[in-house]
Image (tube, rainbow, N blue to C red; front, top):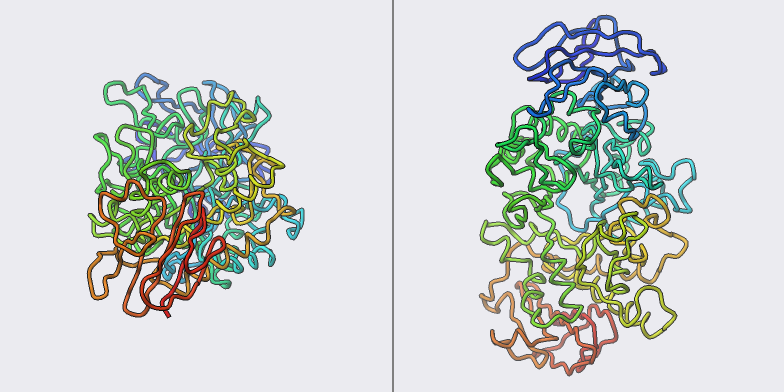
Length: 639
């Protein structure tokens, strides 16, 4: 599919079931002058194809498709629209929203990027096939991470090349990161309501093409990502791509026609079974990719294999429930999920699902097939609510601390299926979680209507920044307890870039439209003590792998692998969990015994250690053998 360099020229293959004719628009070497429109002369089934003799690498082109304009039947063909080839691996300019993209009959050659023919890039087969299991994932947006980094040359800021700078790699190694999870890097376009507000998409979760890197992030094209993967592999770090296989920037019926909509809207996007002109919106972005249909599955699979060949270790799938949807709802045996699991390359890659969308029955946490891991939103919420002080949360918190067996054990999966996180790119930052009770998204231009309403946050007595040293000290203490919880829980911890040193978005919990200092990390105001604190937790976790947990705890064995204790070292009865603010988890694996103690109350509590001598390995706050400090976590090892 797409363009292929062959002897004698370039072969094109384009899917369109309902289109009557596909034309290739050829441009000069500058991409500004359209030289010819050449129809593809052959059709085999739904594939239109042909050979352009004498053409080669570097050819700039676009696609146009003739066919019916019948929106009531889902057909939106418009040969005036220059379309980006969905299989293009390089485009010559970023996408830019313009109302003409949505007006039927309006010529868009002046607005659309040109696709550029490239040789197949294969850089990282060895890396991809030998992807190490993640131990500590670091979520990172290319622009937000690098735009204000003082050790990155200004010319590289905002690009993938910035992430290869020695100071950046040294920071990741100091933290002990095993894998960087890059927020979307595929070419995207701003949502149409943003430019009139003077805003721009900062996250990239609005792609047009699933193969081409955004030129703003990768001016050197695929080689930029391949070089990053190679450099990180040399540093012992894997690269995970956050990929959006659920919708495109073409949006709802009022959106633009820039690629799939113009190729075959009725096939690529799901429509209502009782109304073929009405798009199904399970994503909240105006429409939904029909990932149970063979041409769409093929497009997704080809894209995933392409990224693997550039050296990435795996993928995080945004709104992953869409990948498992059919006409009747979600199933773990859906065509795309099944195709991934039978593929010899993809089945060995790291696979992480965001297990929800906004459609009917969209929350599917714990239901993805092995070897998928899943973003554990229950972990985030239960940990936040416990530390906020919500009543009756100790039992749920203990379940998350122990690896979420209620979610994953039933399908014979391990704690490693749980990607644990307390903050991510969307929602409050870790600092804002303990500084704000309410979201403050006015800068997004939607009168604070956007973003999650219930963030389970608290402010310590003042909303936002304060000069009260007592409140600031309490917030710092809470952050240390939250970080300790994350790294001492069974499962795989994920931290978002900047949370290791106190990033803030001033209460904005949906900074997708803030490609500005609101979301750009302020490296000049980093908390180096906090960075060292996170690095020590990651190192502690590596020294004691039993904390991470390859299996769920049973409470059986001699000694038992786990025992839940009150601070006085007596067992916790079932009826006592609801009233607990402090408790201990005694772990034993035959090689060592560990005692994890937690106290969320605002008062210190007396502590009785089990029999034996216990050495302190870690404490988020002051610790002694007889007292468990307020709002703290401590870990001890039996000598």
